[in-house]
Image (cartoon, rainbow, N blue to C red):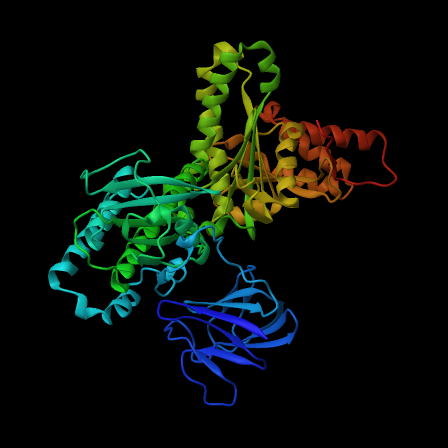
Length: 603
């Protein structure tokens, strides 16, 4: 046997179910299985079937073809799904809460320390926060009481609620508007907003018609027992004076009403409380269900305001975090769709930049100078990355990591990264001149670029955001940046990055290289600017020399390299000298097993 309680804006009923399946839905049953009609437009015609299978166990079947059912333990039953679960449990069907408790379970009740815990009247419990102040649902609730309404009274209500909504949620003015509206709308002497702080209640706002002002002190009393009962039952409770059922704390009270303020997780975060004293002289009109509905509506308005304020505060925090990494436009989009921070696999172009020799300079420079130089250079790098639409992922002491094609699609992501690198190299002479005195002209940098799949999302923690990638190609990009030291060039890209960048980017094949810590060799390409004519003029010659070297034709490779050295600018080309050194070694000592792959150490 199961004890069932059904609660929504129109229904509040508890009953025992003797056994066998029972259904819940928007329309009466046409079959043999009994059905409880929910009077809930958000529910399906036939939505939930419950069958007790054993003591403390039940099967829950979602009969809807479109709407899931949420359970209080965080699970969901998809449309057409079925699960077996332990009892007790609460199911959310449309906008209706259905509590399922085994009949042998101990009933949970509020503590009763005095008579004030009994004798309260109630209205339908407020439904989950998202639906609690729906205009259509409020209209359905109040329309049956239209005989008690007058145009003037309704207009005063609307004006009072509008004043509450205009105030900044969570501010003293917000709570003051709320309590003053409550006194005015329901005809009470005093009112207060109580916010829950663990096991205590904090008075956030209060108003007394006898003084005509609000006060921050606790001079206005309230029934703690009533407030705890409202929080436990999550329902609006009200009561009028009676000679035999008022407790000592309510002995001088003619009427009292309290309504829960619910969070978007359907948790009680506060209570709206109002009372009228016997000696107030405000008349003897008893509180009715219409008054209680109005208090409940106002409590829903407060809940909406607090949720909106919380959302705005989170948005501000997110915006501040996002704008550390993205342009303002991208930060706004991430604020709108925070699921982009969840891990997703994408093809990325990774970018690693390192200031050469900066660690050695740090030993010679004063800390203030070191800080100023690093900040200036990294600011320049950051601006160039963001101008090209890139995302700065992280900073090291003397470099940065960036990426393209995340979180949004950028079909030309490799070209953008290459262009950013070329612009940074073009800025280098100006940076060198600016810090000539401090660095002695030793300022230089290396950039590695790689394109490949990676998992990208928040690689930090919920407390400290770090949006970036993880995976093999991230590590490869870092190793490629290190290869610039070996080849004596400033920008090196993997074959995949060079291919994706396209023909608009000039690239010279440096050869295959086995990088530190990696087993598979990769093809490396030097990226250079259109204006770098010496490199461009000998590109074909170098690539031809390396091809002959790969084939083991060392004499022919040496002949081509000799022609390159005849160029007046050849003394500036480190890769040519690196290759010539290997060719000479092979000519002097021909290897038995030859491999043209470069082997780069970790230096």
